[in-house]
Amino acid sequence: MARKPFVAGNWKMNTTKASASELARGVAAGAPDGMDVGVAPPFVYLDAVREALGSSRVLLGAQDCYFEKNGAFTGEISVEMLKDLGVKFCLTGHSERRHVIKEPGELVAKKAKAIYNGGLIVIHCVGEKLAERDAGKTFEVVQKQLEELTPDMNDANRIVIAYEPVWAIGTGRNATDQQAQEAHAYIRGAMAKRWNKDFADRVRIQYGGSMKPENAKGLMSQTDVDGGLIGGASLKSDSFLAICKAAI
Ligand code: PGA
Image (tube, rainbow, N blue to C red; front, side, top):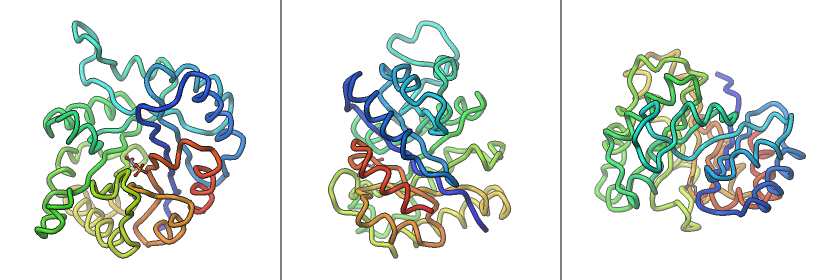
């Protein structure tokens, strides 16, 4: 099953207005055809980045959102607000939100539903901590996180899973090609059971966790690895574009 690769940069809490715009211009200038490329800057730079991306095909993304439509939710940002700024995809369940900000699975699930119902692409992040892997619980953890999505969210173009082993994020220690393929194959199988095989075959599953130009080709040439969610290496257009090119 040929799936269109999708590589997205998660800029996290980095950049300034000027450097975000410059990075976006660099990505827009070099983004390859034949795949989806996206960038997720901090909220406050979304508008500047949209302008910098201009008419390029690079998808604008957000790192988070709140599930309510509007109202008294101090500090929060709704899906409608994101759409107003031209956002096309939004992350949910990133490990830093789960484990650093302590966002519970129930909240992740509500956000994912709101993003999907709002018509955007959901990039839903799943992945085990090192102790969970060592205890043989990788599949169990990933299964539970996948269940934050419901089978009525069934547009395969708008559901993307990012498998991001927590021990590989920002550590320089990536999963091996085999470890990534094993987890991705599990995820696709689990999705075939919860949705159906056709849906599971069409959903893109990105790998995330210390992906860089040197390891991108090996990881993304695995059968079930359909792209990447890139943190550190997405903060320079050269390294991010080198990873994009490794996907096609
Ligand atoms: P990293 O982050 O590439 O810096 O490991 C990946 C992510 O958190 O999405």
